[in-house]
Amino acid sequence: MKEQGYTSSDVVVKLRGMLHVKKIGHTGTLDPDATGVLPICIGKATKIASELTDTDKAYRCVMRLGVTTDTEDMTGEVLSTSDCEGITGTQVREAITSFIGEYDQIPPMYSAKKINGKKLYELAREGIEIERKPSRINIISISNINVDISGDIKRAEFSVECSKGTYIRSLCRDIGAKLGCGAAMESLVRIKACGIDIDKCLTLSEIEKIVPEGGDLGGNIIPIDRFFMKYPPIRVMGRDEKLVRSGNKFRCEGKAPGRYRVYLRDLTFAALYDVNKKGEARLCRLFLG
Image 1 (cartoon, rainbow, N blue to C red):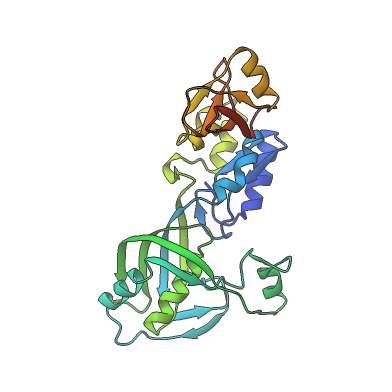
Image 2: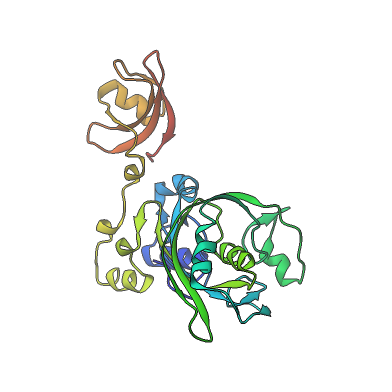
């Protein structure tokens, strides 16, 4: 689990040193002030990092009403303020839930999104703001909405499940714009990513304690094949095993066309293969070596 103050790249660098591994990478950037689930791919698992990045994610967000900033969160420079006069809790809830479904979202300037090979936040730090094309994203669900507009600082807290490419900061910005008072993200916790819940995660400090004491992280490392359980398994032996080890095609009689998880005789997960109507299995992705 990423802790506050670290970038996603910081986490990778620290884990590389702790675990003494060369191949390691994360599956989707979290803002430095955001916390929560940051799945890390180690060794052969780096081959599927891009696929895991494309999965849906879930967050718990606190949004402050009546303020806009250049970063769309409370770390940035305040651009405008509003007393939110006349806005009711019901209106806030309706505005939040109105974004459920697909919509075209303009990414924030302070983001790692690249345009013409340069990250937007690099341009923003140079004082350059450019036109950004909206991206089609999907807000799958919004739930557990709590609105507090009784005090001087007015907030709304909610859980959101969304597609890849969604910026929760920009969702807060758009909710504030709809209400007419402005809004900025105050805090963010990613509670689920790649099918992994936050209560299954370890922090860097927890890993640091386990490793020097000779602890085994095996119980906290998810096998690669767990992410492909939607595909049925095939176990190969003898000549077929030799073919699979080399990434070659093999005959697979009696299996319906489709993608399969392929295991060796000793049940080592070896590869993903696609079986065609002729019973021929061709390599999709090899995980050996």
